[in-house]
Length: 227
Image 1: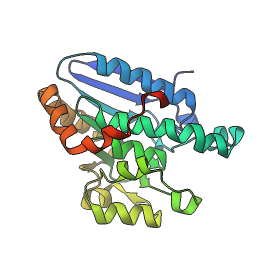
Image 2: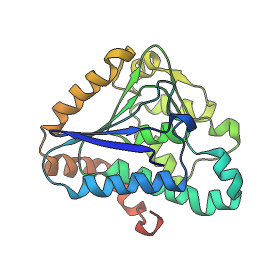
Image 3: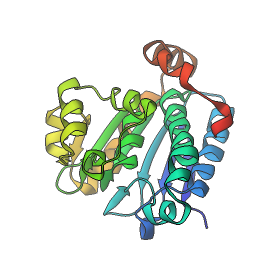
Image 4: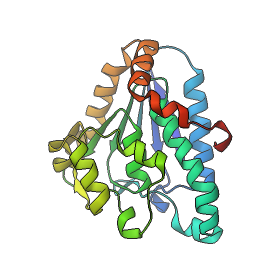
């Protein structure tokens, strides 16, 4: 069953998570889908931008599918799944075009990490939380995940978020610089697409070169065998 839907309109890729029944959580199959979509986007030329959102009004993404992992075991989680998720996060952080994550619902754990890997973030102002609950789940962040969280703009806020596990809503996230825009649900996607449309006019090669200049330390962590 497909969990992602990719549409392209002119110079905008709209990638929609469509597995709201499972809170858009991650399994190996979902990671496979992400990588297949990114293969397609990376291979195409021309100026463009990528927007990631969800068709579920409650969940942007709730991170790793815990039932799936419980069926596999903790050794599988740390030995296989986390390394694969790490590599997806790196790939998103370094992808060769502008990216905007549109958080129209809760972004918890792995969902918050995915959002952190994007260049920019928008968020629903009235409902939904961004949260790194790993501290309360007694799960540490991998070195790659730590580097991904460090991409968030506000150093003190990102440290507070990972050390307390406190969820923050859109208005607070915008006020503290974690997201670039927080607006009502009915205008969130249109305004996000407008933002992404402006970014899509930038020269793709130059944009990627500048982005990699700031994120070049991540390139040494990429392991193609883990995809």
